[in-house]
Length: 97
Image (cartoon, rainbow, N blue to C red; front, side, top):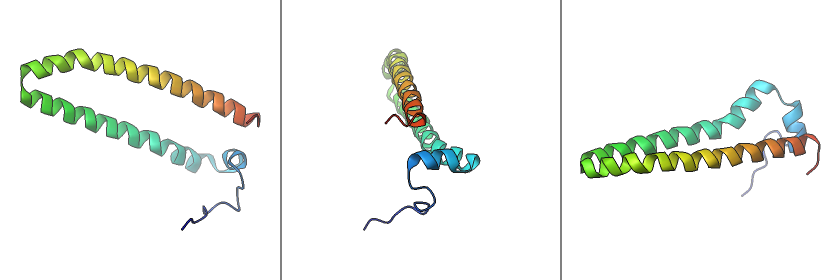
């Protein structure tokens, strides 16, 4: 069963929620998913490195080659993600959605 959000009467749409809510709780609420995603990524990379180190030197050497490629792929993904986020913010600010 769907339950409406607590502040639906206070902020009927996203624009008013982003412009009228207090800044501190808004930043915390919006940054929480990014922080959780980064923590999950770090735990994944540490676990991967641990198991590759236990397998042997060949796997660790392969990891040393593949890791920079993965970092480049993630960098391009973040580049386009940040650009799209900025573009969406500008459009929402202009109410051009």
